[in-house]
Length: 188
Figure 1 (cartoon, rainbow, N blue to C red):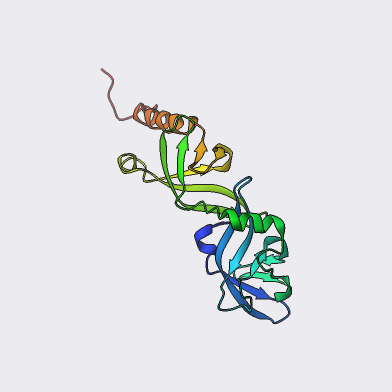
Figure 2 (figure 1 turned 45 degrees about the horizontal axis):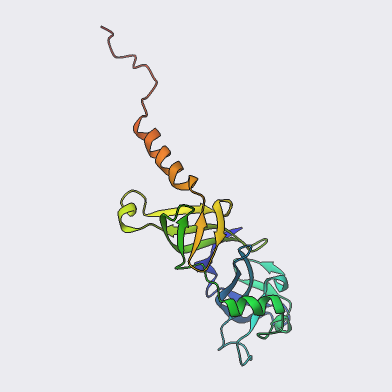
C-alpha cells in the first residue's frame, strides 16, 4: 500500500499487549542515502520517555487502517539506542520543503509531500510544487525515485530528462491531429 507521508503524521500506534492506542506519530526519520524511512518520533504526551520515543519500522508487525500494530510498548526506543537511527536523528533530514533541481541547476520546485510504500518504507515519489512561472502550466509535479540522482545539502538533484520529457509531452499534445474519417463529411 502506498500512502502520502502527510497522512502518516498523527497515525495511531496500537499495542497487541494492551489492546489499544499507545501513541501517535509526530515526525518521520528519513535516511537520505536511500530514501528509506527508518523510524518515527512518537508524540511525547502519550509515552513515558523523557527525550521522546522512537518506533523502529522493523518493529511494526502490521499496518492497517486502524494504525500501526506492534507487539508492546517495549518495542519503542530511546534516542541513542540504535546507532543508524541516532545518526539520522542528528542529521535531521526532512524531504518536505527541500528544493528540487535538475543536473543543469534548473529549479524544478519544492517538495510539498512524498509517497511511501508501507511494505518496505521506501519513499517512492516526491510531490513537488512548481515555481510560480512554471505553475501556470503544471502546478504540481510527481517525481519517481528512479529520477533522483543525488541528494546534497542544498537540493535534491533529478535527471535533466524530466524537464525535456514534460516539454515533449506538451508538444505532442499540441501537434495531435485526430486520425478518423467523418462519415458525414462530403469529400470535394
